[in-house]
Amino acid sequence: MKAGIVGLPNVGKSTLFNCLSNAKAQSANFPFCTIEPNIGVVNVPDSRLKKLGELVNPQRILPATVEIVDIAGLVKGASKGEGLGNQFLGNIRETDAILHVLRCFQDDNIVHVDGSIDPIRDKETIDMELQLKDLETVDKKLEKVKRAAKTGNKEAQKEEAALLKIKAGLEQGRSVRSIELSEDDRKEFIKPLQFITDKPVMYVCNVDENSATTGNDFVEKVKAAVKDENAEVLVLAVGTEADIAELEDFEERQMFLQDIGLDEPGSAKLIRGAYTLLDLQTYFTAGEKEVRAWTIPVGASAPQAAGVIHTDFEKGFIRAEVIGYDTYVEHGSEAKVKEAGKMRVEGKEYIVKDGDVMHFRFNV
Ligand code: GDP
Image (cartoon, rainbow, N blue to C red; front, side):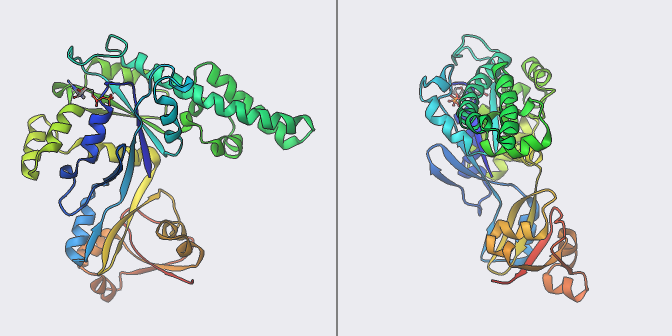
C-alpha cells in the first residue's frame, strides 16, 4: 500500500514524513528504509505480530508496510506548472490514498504562504490544483472517446456521458469521489483513469502540542467542512510527535507521549486510520524462517490473500490451513494446535479473517 502526503508549503508535511519514517520510532528489530529522499516505508505496528514472533522464534519478523510519499511543491498554480508541483502531481497518481495535511496551529515564526491560518481555504487551494490535474486527464480521455462516440459506438457514447458528468463536476470545484455516478459507470469508466481526487483521503489536522488530545477550533471547522466526504479526520501534533520520535529510548518516548496525554505515537493512529479508510486487514504467515504480516482488503478470499505473497500462489491455489490468532496464542504453537484438532482446512471460497495465521498449499 502506498499513501501520498499533500498540503501547502509549511503546513508540516516533511515533519510528518520524517516523524513517520524515523527509524527510532520503529520497534528495534523492525528495519525502516528510505527508498528515495521523499519515499519512506513505515511498518504497520501490530502487537499480534510481536506475540507470534515470541512463540515461533523465527530468523526474522517482517511487519506489513505502508509506503509513504512526500509530495512537496504543491502551491496555487501547481497544475499549470508553477513551482515543482506539476512534476510531483504525477507521483500522487500511483498512490492508493492521500494524506492531506492541514495547518491547524498558530505560530508567528512560521510563515503561512497565504498570510493567515485558514485550513478550509488551504484545503480548497490544494483540492483545486488536484481537480485541475484531473480535468486534464478527463479532457484527454474525452478527446479519444468523442471520436468513437461519433461513429455510433454505444459503449463509447455511454463512456462519453459519464466523462462529461465528471468534467462538469470538476469544473464546479468538486472532487471526483463526490460526483454522483452509477456504480457501473464508476467501475467501468472512471476507476481505470485513476483520478487523483477519486482516491480515499485522510485529513491530518496538524495542531499545537496543547491541542493534541482536545483538538481546537480549526479542527472543528475542518470536521464540519468535510462531513459529507467519506474521509477520516485525524488530529496530530506533528511537530511534537517528530520531537518525540527523535528520542532514542522507547521508554522515554512513551513517557513524553503520556505527558501530552497520548498513549501511542501518531504513526500508529495514522496507519490504523489508513486501514479503516481503505478497508484493509492483516493476516499472518508463521514459519521457522519468518513470521510475517500481510495486508489484504476486508472480504478477500483465501486465494486472493495468497496472491499478495505471489501471483502463482493465487493461480495454483489448492487449499489453506488456517489457525485463528487467538487459537494460535492459546495453544502456543502450530503443532499443539494440530494436536488439539483446531487447525482448519479451508478452500477457495474461504473469506479470510483479520488475524488468521495461514499456510497455503498450491500447484506450480
Ligand atoms: P512542509 O513545507 O509542509 O513540508 O512543512 P515542514 O514540515 O517543513 O514544516 C514547516 C515548519 O513548521 C517547520 O519549521 C516545522 O518545524 C514547523 N512545524 C511543523 N509542524 C509544526 C507544529 O505542529 N507546530 C509548530 N509550531 N510548528 C510546526
